View 1: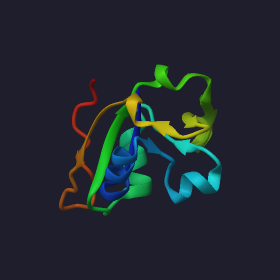
View 2: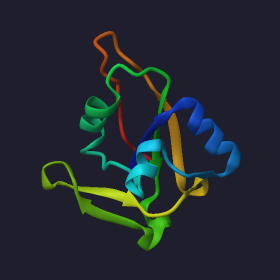
View 3: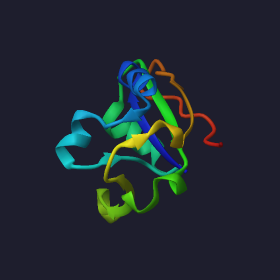
View 4: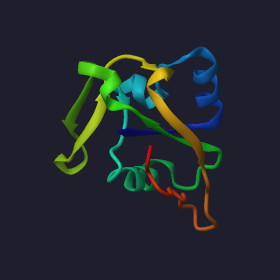
Length: 112
């Protein structure tokens, strides 16, 4: 599994459309950024701290085929990048990402 954090309204629009084309940052980089289970917390901290109304989604990496590539990013660590749109049929679940009083997000258990 790989994970995506996105604003609630953008995610709901993607669900309605059946496809997610990524955020503005994804478009600028030419791929959709994902995180592994071990990377989600740091991603939330670095890029989304203090932002409310976010969604955390789990995606079945196998359904993305060769369009999903693990490439070096932050500190040389391999991050999953999707070169193409995300079909919502590959999403296993999505849920709100609660914002705590200190500006951090409550990630919770990451399971299918």
